[in-house]
Length: 50
Image (cartoon, rainbow, N blue to C red; front, top):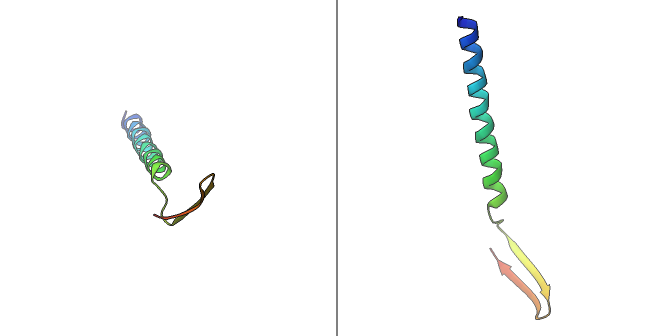
């Protein structure tokens, strides 16, 4: 039985790590990039510092 319990802990640990990685990737995708943004539209050229 101890081998089954160790395997269960391994699966739970892998799921926790996977959820953490997915959460971090979502955070990076939603984070606004830093730097300079250049927009060209009907009002002309706009340069914004972020």
